[in-house]
Length: 215
Image (cartoon, rainbow, N blue to C red):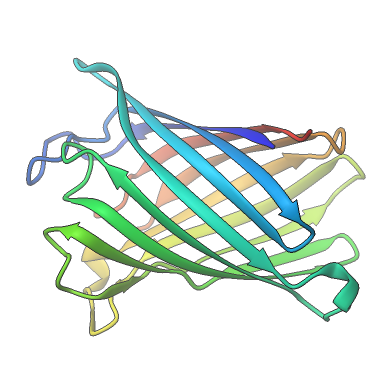
């Protein structure tokens, strides 16, 4: 599968912070290539790029993500998978240049209703937070199939701080994204949403688009 993740920040931080470029009016384009090897194992490779005002289109970094899941023929009551993602991002885009993420994924489909929970943990391997352990970055999604081709939902993303000491709410990140998913063909994936930040540490307004093609 090949996917393109396109994000544009309409209203975010306007000034560099600790050597990291601002998000204001930045366009982020990510290409994701995923290959399944068995019914329970796949690996994805990401190429991150960004178009910053006054900086042009630049390469940001690369990640690799193996993922294993409980096979469908086990007939578990919920879907369960675990991915681990390791990658590099340039210093001008992150204070931590090497990171490692562990992401359990639990999901369930009840007729037209879908729910997904992702209690993820991220650790800096090189950078300013490399000695601070894992950070808790949970996310979730709920959606409802309005028709066989259209699903409406809400996605939630957050970064709460390190497990040893969560940040104050004003320093955490919390974002709500109403989304629409189009199921026009088994070969195609389409997801579009408008994100709103819930505190001053989060980008206040952004859009996201995911367009994917299965082979």
